[in-house]
Length: 292
Image (cartoon, rainbow, N blue to C red; front, side):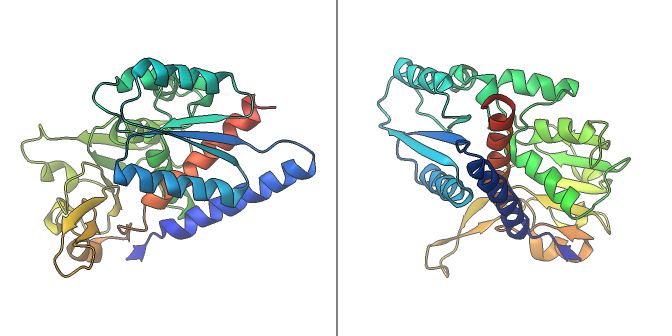
């Protein structure tokens, strides 16, 4: 069993981007810019935003945090997004989800220019992915593909089973791995809660991607011998023995499943670090395509 080290790969990607940015600066060019908009005081969101800001600083991006009270109106938020759509110093706009209930997330996502949609959530990005055009990929599933590529795990003709159908992970992961490209071109099955016996599908997987947000749902008897298991889940589980009062776990019962796998990602330290790394790659891509 080989443990897929997402921290190591994410660090490699940040170093590659940092070197590119150094070259741009040496040529007298501006740095790529990313604005992150945070509404409210969700503790998890604040952690994510801090990590994104730290990663931007590390690679040499211009990074701005727009932090606003949860009482901000939808109109004001949309006006703020439009101001950054027009700002030529910023190549990426990210609105941290979730948003307060009085704000329509769909309107906010659609307000971001498709040219600065570094989260890959805009319908234009999703549509381009669907038909195989070059576009901004949703960061987490793109990170999954990048891990497969960097570990040289063959995907062509393999049966990939994805458990979870979210717009953020499950659906875009399916579209990415269906493409007729290297480290894709797979036969993809997407499973979800309507499956009467989900093990019928998961035990067929050459590559199993767990992305449903259900702690330790995937057990050993749901995985075939030698499978590659990618655990996208990050769940807080109460743990009285932990000083924090909780521990982080994935959607896979790791200790039970790992011995059956050829490759597996841990939680934490697997897919998680890749999400921010791919956000940086999307921002750099926007800068190269539209920012100069």
